[in-house]
Amino acid sequence: MSVSATSRITRSCTTISFEVPCGARVGIAGRTGAGKTTIIHLLARFYDPDSGQILLDGVDLREYKLADLRNQLAIVLQEPVLFSTTIAENIAYARPGASADEITKAAVLANADDFIVNLPEGYQTRVGERGMRLSGGERQRISLARAFLKDAPILVLDEPTSSVDIRTESLILEAMDRLMRGRTSFTIAHRLSTLEKCDLHLELEGGRLEYAGSVQPVTAATSFKEGGLNG
Image (cartoon, rainbow, N blue to C red; front, side, top):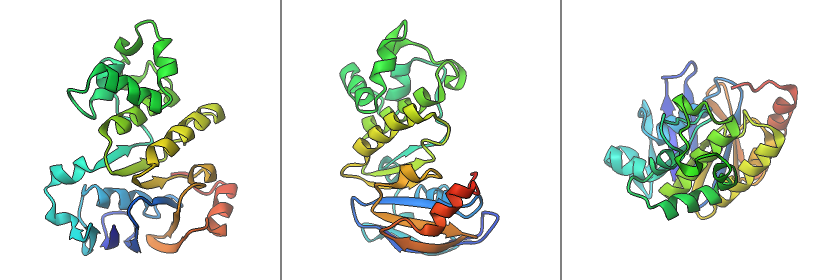
């Protein structure tokens, strides 16, 4: 994948240019408003760049049918979107018609099966409005199970561990590592531990790409320790 684009939709003009080999893990860091989420929005074509282009297998994203492009993406958000229905149906949202065995397998891979089977109604437990009957870590693992079930070649993880405790973070990181194998992935994170296994590190500042390399930049680590990255 090759990205060379400018977008003026965010508070600051985001100008970026980089290439990602197939199967690479990309870690994206930066302060609030630096343009991290803009990259994700451009990849998913929530909007298009004002100039430049994003190429997937040598083809401009704008040449793909939107539905076909998004079928190639699995997105795990900081705040997972769950529906007021059962856990099984929430996981199956990624692939309607999936069998019970396929849903269970996805949950196992996402480290979600252990807590699900201990619920009174197991996979038929209703999660409540926006999934509020589950903890933040449980909701995140349901979202990861969806991604496993979808089995898309490109993975986007937007702050997947930002709102969980250390024990739950460990479970999520283990599931993430499993999920990223064999896929091209983009991970936005403030916690350095979340980006440790990335092959390519990008640091954004003021809407511009300040660093791209195989090692986490010292400036990013400093920013994390100072608590300057809040969103």
